Image 1 (cartoon, rainbow, N blue to C red):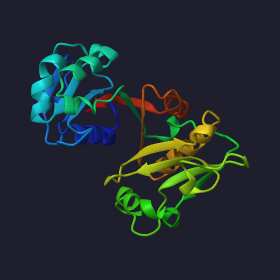
Image 2 (cartoon, rainbow, N blue to C red):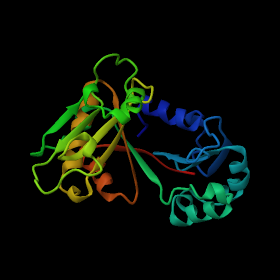
Image 3 (cartoon, helix red, strand yellow):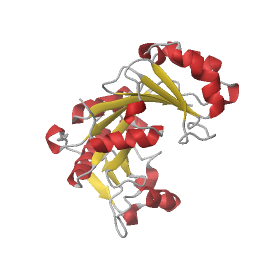
Image 4 (tube, rainbow, N blue to C red):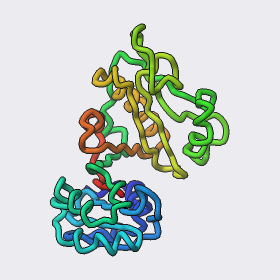
Length: 255
């Protein structure tokens, strides 16, 4: 199934090329203006759902080093432990150090009728401008939807009732914050990227699912696309995407 046009535009923006550039078969390697000499943006290997081909974009030295290796493999080989190992072998050591250890899967939800809301006992609380931790103020302001000029919802958080499990990583969002799903618009009016984190001691209990479900519903109510990504070794996050009805749109890895 062809991705929603808004998701297509996001894919093209990330790659720096139109979808027509993505090959139907094989591996295409190109220098892209979207790649910069910064960790995690020097190399971007991406396959769009519905195509067997792979587009590899990078800065010139990366393309020079990795082109032959990438084009010698099939798409399945490239997106496998073998592919990652071979790419790491041919990249300059300083670049190879930032190569992802596994690849990421990206999912989208574009319409309410495909959304399977999670009905849990946990209450997800919308966080507004006044709830932004001081040290995150500039970041959250930069990530908000461009049309938002005053108060705005930037995340949904779930809180627990366990007296002996105080928040650690999420303490800045509340003493008993169990999970938080942050919505990052990154200059777009059409797509919100979801990032979720759950306190380690409370994982596997549905807090993350509840937070992402609430955030997804809110995004869809705004008429926008919910975009959710997870690495293939993060089974809990992949289950959230599957449970809520997200559709796969692409897979990728970076260096």
